[in-house]
Image (cartoon, rainbow, N blue to C red; front, side, top):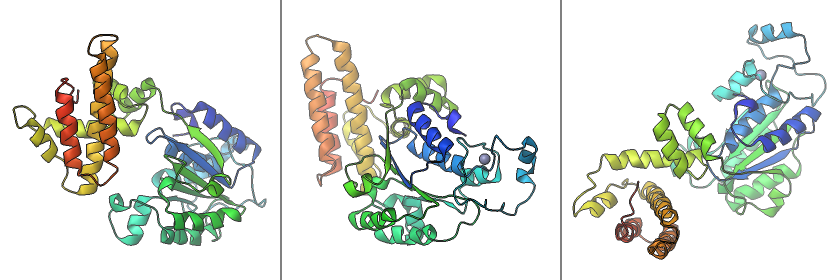
Length: 344
Ligand SMILES: [Zn+2]
């Protein structure tokens, strides 16, 4: 996949291509915006374009030689060669980045930290200072294969304070051939001193049509892709979460007087996962209530739907506190049932 194949974000991609085309690559970039909108994908394509071996201006015959040798190509004599403004998707560098095997392009995320700590990735709620220290070793090492070293810090909003301070030290004096891309769902957890050192791009939610197309590309039938895209709020991640929960609920017997009890007890056993799942179920109820409220227009029940949405939003907020998630979900289901609002 190259920039051209990414749906949406044409303005941000245009800016990145302009930076690449003139060779003015900022040492640090910040991609922020809701989860599931494609920020990470764009960061990966940016890394690929930076290190792509295919330069359109060069001899076309050179393209055939890209696979000819497994040994690394010579590092160009100029320290910061002009990068390509898009990835070719074919050269050794592009293929290695796609497969996660490029020695100069590192992804720092929950998987990376989980690997370091020998723990499950889903248990990594924040990125810690030891993780930053670990990848700092690579920051100051000599490049192994390509002219640019790229570090994509995914979910950078989860960097804790100590980790951010360690990160700040690197950003204060970054090596000239290193590029850091911080990918964050929200900016407000990042130190202003970090934000001020980045070239910041804001990623807006995708249009429903884009989400639908992406879901179709992932193999979902058209009707399901269409229904999920409407509920997704412009996020492919949301659509995936909703699909997962819907599939799980389909296997739960959700009728009869014990319906609510069954739904609550169907939550995953692990508290962290149960809380996340309860949040998704609350979101589904909010979306469903909103749909009914809009359909009601100025009808006599409009006020009741509006009040329900307000209640559900308040309950969703409670899921971030220490209140038992099962109790919150049960209350939400009881309130929704009064107005026949369900997960549809
Ligand atoms: Zn390439």
